[in-house]
Image (cartoon, rainbow, N blue to C red; front, side, top):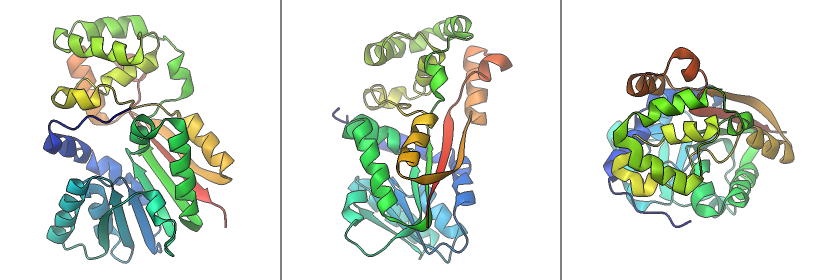
Length: 273
């Protein structure tokens, strides 16, 4: 799939930065003794710089393919006085021939974009296998992304009443029609959950609408890491408090309906020594 240019880049970056405190849960999986950390798809460096400030003895490298984002990241690091972080326009495969290996490799809201724009599950497998090659023994791959458990793509539990509440909001109906054109009829909770993560981004809809936010289940990540002979350290799912409140306000969802939804997954896998 060809990536559509962002209409509102500043809005996109602001949205990426908004849940910064929640993203910084990543710090729990970076050892104070870590020598090097790689942040893949770092965008404007908001997460990378914040982590570099928390771990001043660790060297951070942020990479992204968007040169404009990298310039913003460098400016952010300079303004923050973060001397232990550098940024460059590159991708995982560009690093294979270098000597550096990393104690943690971070993939924050990256794998769903790799799936959408780089060739589906084969591209995801390449990226995770490449990250594995760049790990030091005992190093961790840390994924934070939108994901669901597999059963949500089959379950219709509470779906009719939840869908009825969503469709009462007339302003989002054009986006809902588009969503069905991209992803098919909404026949399971997972499909509705997917749409609910999208409708707020009308300003960049041409880019965001067709992007598959949740193509990889938590079980599929676990299977990939098992194939890579890595140990799973963490695998869990949650609904961000901001989204829980937003969906309650926008659609009148009750607690049982909100408990039926997820937004964010953490999967952490460790390379064996």
